[in-house]
Length: 445
Image (cartoon, rainbow, N blue to C red; front, side):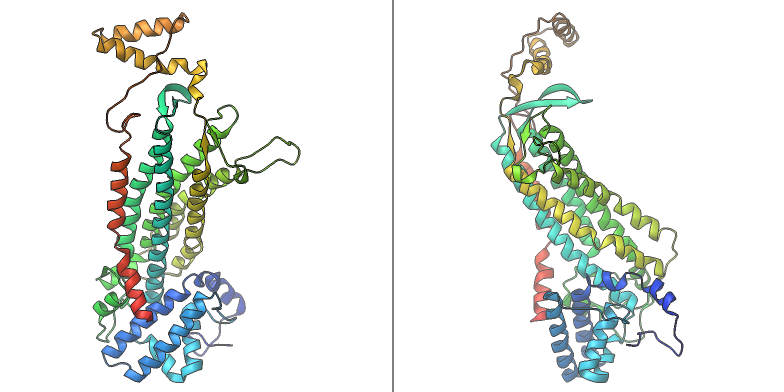
């Protein structure tokens, strides 16, 4: 059985090992290629300060690139009896290069190693999510522009209230995503700082060049204080989880609307047939299962910050094994959110709307405010106009004028979609993803 990085002259029982390792081997597969990247930067720095020879660095980098390629092909495995990804990588290097493979851990701890792995992994996931949010945003803007002149009822208290439009409805969710992207950018900025070199949380007596590893890995800056770098474990995940939950909140609300508006009692929208499911006994059913699952998964993601917070709460500074459990709820959540974003974009692209909803006289009273405003504009006091129209409605004598004309910013007749698109464009430009992409390409070249 392979030895552990921390092994001394005693063995733990199999039950204790099972409990303490937990799902680490499974979770660490998410981090494998990022552990390799972090090691490549670390040993390049070690050679620059004289802790590795140039030929040793060359051989180690070649082997690490080979391991990275294994990860990319999905062929990297953590062997039975090996504790985690860090141990597996070091074991593979030692098998190939002998004692040279044991030199890569100088000047670091598994604590800062997992910190940098998590940050490298998370920033890639944030880029993917940003890309998927932008795709959905573009679909919503396109639908908003396509149906900008199609009116629909607006609701308060689930009672018909005032005229709205599909331009407003689709556009509202687009602008919500533009705001959500600000949270994602904040999460990115806090994530994209280098903890490598903090070791177990108290630095190292080796003269580490942390600026060099920061540059090699394409981080914006480093977590400067080594104690704070360790305190960032859990905090990073919590802040990222809040950003994910914000996006999930938008998706959950949109999914609820879509399910409601797709029902026969509303029939405002029609979902593509291939995105619905049937019933085992009711041949007429076309159920909006995809949006129902998006709603449930999005609500689950909205619980993620609380899960992370409850695991890390009330821990003093320094490392504690409690933090291992965060990986189990945090790492898989990205795939779930990306799946929801992609499914939503797919359906929105294919969604059709009823362009004649307000022909139904049951919606006539939503034009009452238009009439009140018309009378007020002619000089009648607003309260008198309100009372007059109200009495006409009660007497069944109200006749709506359905030719409405709204012009102010953000209204039916002036959606401001171009400005909303500019907001999104400016936020995306502020990420500077290219720094990360270029740095990693150079490291792997």
